[in-house]
Length: 133
Image (cartoon, rainbow, N blue to C red; front, top):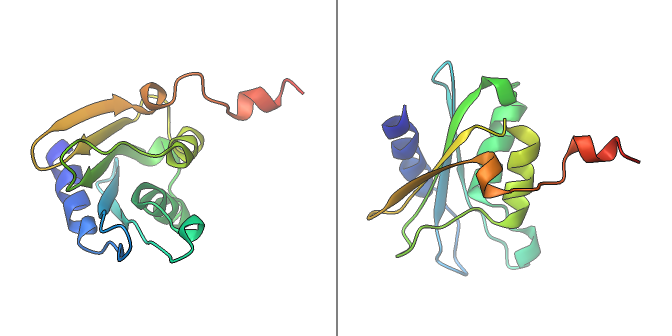
């Protein structure tokens, strides 16, 4: 599964729209049933309207009816010299839409690492925090 999800993330990267930064990112959400949902970053001249690859992939999975318990892993890839980790917004979305122990594979052409969602955003704010109000 690891090889598949990373390979599909590289395929997604080909569809990135990054004319301003030239920083292309691809992501893949793979489900237990082997269904893959791809995402690429899509930039906008108004940078705040840009959407990251990992959010695009997760939103595609959820739009198709998948939920956290259906998702086996996520892969995020870039062509950067160093590994490219999810931004804060993506980490918060991942905490909301994935199980805390979901593996997240991060890769460039030279290196690869794996973290759980909880490891990427320790001490996260989540739905449990809302019950304290």
